[in-house]
Length: 398
Image (cartoon, rainbow, N blue to C red; front, side):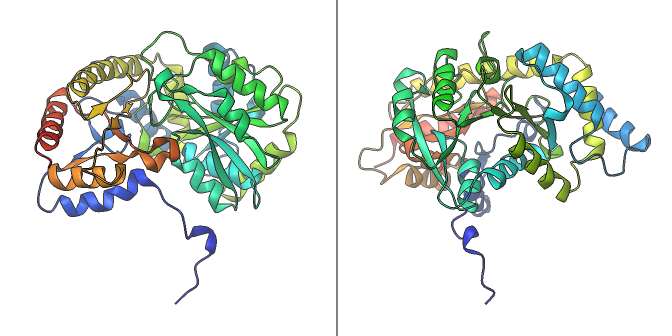
């Protein structure tokens, strides 16, 4: 047997790990996939805009098929500076932008550059599990500050303060949040940033859902940051419905040049992997040159689905949920009683009995226990089938 590196022994990813069970269930019944946050899986409602696809094809015909600058196509990085200034009121220059192969690569880069054995990343709980997986892979540990379900999943600042140790390297802010769909109050975000400043920590701001919100007010954390260094994560997968293109970006907001060395070393990592998809970068540039009408329509469609799913959820006494203010996720609490030993048992049993595939909440950290995450991306007609199955399953479960 070949010995596998220990750093890979405990890598898990609940969102896709459950897919292995779903494939087995699919041999005997239809599976409704509500586990993966991919709008393009539902092309009748959410498809990549034609003009972006045309821009991708044009880029290839125009000869943009070679390696790009490892940090990203300069014209795209310049456009992203303009985008961040207009939309989020922050000033960056092109050298502050690094184009990545999806936000996931940015997460890996940051952990590789920041985390050593025993170091800690302070993450929201519940929180997106990829951060934990990469932190663990590089020998670190994920600790959590609590998002308060009774307060619309807003960050509990006292919980964050108590979780900071001399091993903490950064505080992760995720708003809009995956898995809860919450949009944190600006006051809470500012307090988290101030807390990072008190302890000389950097802030990681995951903003991949910043255009998928159902309320008018949204403040980019970097616009509230003052002199605290912030590494932002964003991309084109969600708002531009191009998940499979794997294109994202990192930005380094660093008013006092506190993370210059960190940035330099992440750039070295980017050079090792050569570059992100070159034609996709030129298509992304075109997406930023056009109005976001496709995103506006997407959010309108999602709002109707969210409202329907929320209404049905309220009619099921075994479940309770906070109304999501962004993303396309709901994170209901399961009233387990003695019918299921935990949330994973519930989710697996629901999948096997009904074909409804969701994700167990404990896969998003300890504060996700007793919950499940489901998307509301399917059509209302399919959501009706899904909720009918869930309701029937719960009423008849002994």
